[in-house]
Length: 364
Image (tube, rainbow, N blue to C red; front, side, top):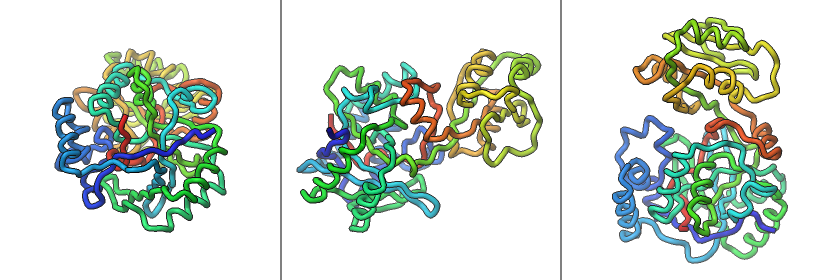
């Protein structure tokens, strides 16, 4: 049984790839100043008709073309401190959320509908669902061998990572890769739960495009919260004191340990240490013991790409008055939760770096 299958990708011409592809603008504040071209223009537009027209225009001008035969794509993301190599292909949506393809995160209904509209609008999935599999040394060695040849794309993107792609289309390599993929028994959804749910709710026969990385190469950052509460500071502290010891701090911890949170209120950071040990994830404890009890509203999720200073600035804005910083969730914990068919709160994990949108696409 093959969990990951080859397909005919829709992809940009080589000379334009670095301009047409983009990190998702939702998560990179520094992209706001860049010219809106290619997929950045499509993702940034709130007008679906304009996005569809611009997408068709890229096709008409042959800035993006479709592969003539089914292939696998090998995707490498790297900088001087990190590298990860993944397999890009398609999966059967019917195998999602059972023993083969597992999710771990709850979703927001409005975002599921938003993703559904975006995908159906241009009948194309413009970025792969980010997934993980338990690492296999022989498969890793095979992928490394492939990456010693010349890539079809190789450039540094706006996210300050190098993105490289190789096509696996020769019969001997396709056969070898399929034999390795047969040994992958489970795929874990890391990032893309809302898109997967959007595809399911489309009532169309869709095979999602995914990129699968070995679990030991994956990097997870903290995924923090900013919010608004109308409770007084005293009332909020009384609620938190029931489960945490509150300590005023001058500087944020370089890396938070399990059982610790950090909170910013009125220009001041605090360390929150759990009074009793708890096997639950810190992000779950944050929601159950604090966020749900202080009647939080206007909750927004801020990735660890952004600094503590950025969180502090938001916590002192008109829209928000509190920021919470949490420790990153370990990939093994994510896989364990998925195996148990349990779910974390929405936006609990931030996987970074990610593949670009628009570099390898899949028509529905």
